[in-house]
Length: 451
Image (cartoon, rainbow, N blue to C red; front, side, top):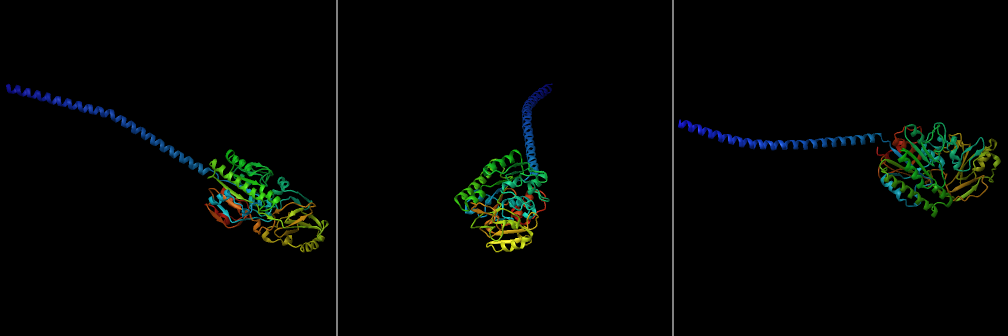
């Protein structure tokens, strides 16, 4: 019994010890498990929150990239064409820091060859249409009608004559681009203030003699930002006007060259300030150069008289157009051929490289002076013009400029000289617009583009 009791006691003690151990272990395990239970949900929550945040961030990034991609896909290319009337290819040896910057950050041509005649309206329309004068029909700065014996007497008068600009098969880029869904505008640019094929640019500012380059820039920037225009032609006449009055390399003309450069710098800074510099292609061109007048020759009183003509274009310049009376044709021709420093052509004799034969507006005779020599045709008063243009476009003094920068153009690239009709297919390529029939050649200028 004792043994039995002792065993029982021992068993009970053992049980008690085991129970105590189990309880302690259990309590410890329970405590440990309880702590674990308290820790695990907190970790899970943190991990879950971080995972959600990470997923949301990824979705946001994907969304932003998608929107950016779509915006880039949908964003239309933009062009602003700045035409500085009379800026010669050599810049008249005046330093132009803003234009130099464009060349360094973009492209330039050695020179740009005007179409004939090297006058403003014909060449500005050639740039806008890609057509030679004989093809677009704006054959002179002055509007004239041989049959009705009428003519305008100033550049400005012709800017509102619709029929002079609106010819069959002729369409400036601001109309073609608008048809393709782009928004376009012209600032004092010839042809932009008239109806072409019953259309006009979305925005237009008529010609103003007193407008500064900065005035035009402010309007252009406003249109790009507020009206989301895609194509703007900006024209300024200040340099040409000053050159006519004071001559090449005069202090007055050199000062205006600087003023034009300041205006261009103002444009570049405005584009930068409004984060447009990387999206807008800036093209800086001119219509012709300038050269000082060395000799003035009156047409009449040299064996020909007013009565010998059905029509003559009254001008003070390097070239004029004549319609002699039929019975006087040969006599007038032979007489005018004797005038030194001038070349006389019957219409069919006009050199093919002038591209100035095949238009009904051109009358039966052209007289053209050598460089520096001008005609006074029918004007009674003497002129104070000291420098001009209109001579054969092959003279380097008549060559103009081409500079450009923007996302479509290479950087620091110099092109060989080309004719200004090549600018039109270049602009069409940038915009993605199908060009109208034109005389330009894209292959000549495409090497300036990035793609």
